[in-house]
Length: 466
Image (cartoon, rainbow, N blue to C red; front, side, top):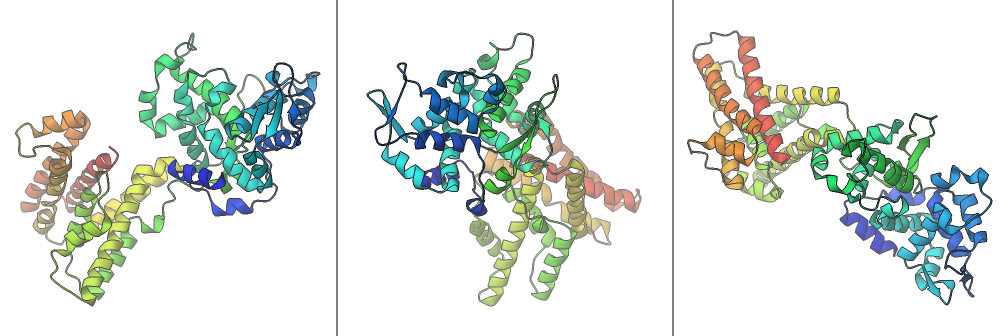
């Protein structure tokens, strides 16, 4: 059970932190309810009611120890404990049945072999199994909005967003807004027919947020101990933030090693390596080439790209190894830079920080191409558009020599992308003219080059995000 759960979570792209298994005092509502139910069943079995529900004494025990938010709201008023009226008990039973920990025979509940095995596991191991099955259940069963599968399908993405965003209390509506801002494609994928039946006086997106509040935060994350809740007074909505358990359970999806992101410091280090090892490498040209090479999926294998670059160097032995190591290091930096600027929103960094780091990279690229002679600088830039055109031809089947090439770009991608491609060509032509007769100031010439580099990066980042 445990191994299967871990393998399935890995397939879903969920990486469980090793330190999670050493957590002490694992306080999880749903896990308590499941264990209470299992421990209520002896060898003779647990007799169910005439309608097949759990006996009230078991329901009472579960509710008093492992009440869900829905049950907590009215716990002080409760005088009767029926499974069909208490989500805590019903959810515990449904989970046990889904995991095949229990079975019904002749009006009684019995532990299965898996049920007995589950009770021998550590709380951490039990939790992983529970976590895995809850991600696979249609949790709409517990809130009455079973048709809104678009909310179910957002559960993993929302959970990772919770994990990666700053640890602040926010309403579920705010988290939903952040979710749709970070993943705009989700908004277009929301099947309005699913939830329009609930949208009477509200928009479909507001209904989506409302269902997400109940389904994801109250019925999934809270019972699993993945969020903490701050109860607000009416009419304000309850607020949630990630729990320490969630921090311990999951790592950041995009844990970027910022020290590898292309920057002035990295550029200086690479230049020193070229000088010390006497490598014949045009660092600017190779860097821009590599940015283009990693714009499409599946990403080319690192060694294949290195082998392509090594075709220019007819060398063997230790010197060849130095070249290969250099290229591998540069490729790692390029890939990390892509992660930085295409995934950063999902790990909760501020936009100001992102802009600062982006401009640092542009400045670093400028230092590579800038020379005391403007015409040499312009000449070095001439190859840059060719890298993009090759990618568009090879991986997007565009005829880059066609008269209506820009129109084809617009149809293949969008009008904004096509305009950016055209802008790159226009900017290069302007730089070349200014380089011949430097009518503009040196500062303006530098700014034009940086704008050209920014346009190039806009193109490769857009391609990478397709």
